[in-house]
Length: 63
Image (cartoon, rainbow, N blue to C red; front, side, top):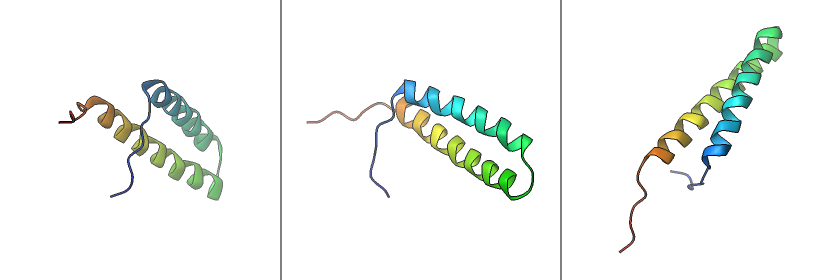
């Protein structure tokens, strides 16, 4: 597994807005550019989903 990073709720919101913009852009493009933007959109959505899940989980307490 990779290293953990922290993404704040405001950063998650910014990533969501970026995903919306990226999706709209992908719809206006054709060919390879459209496929590349769609692939980037999938990555953004995955990152947003993982960040939201990580932010929803309780932080472990240190003993």
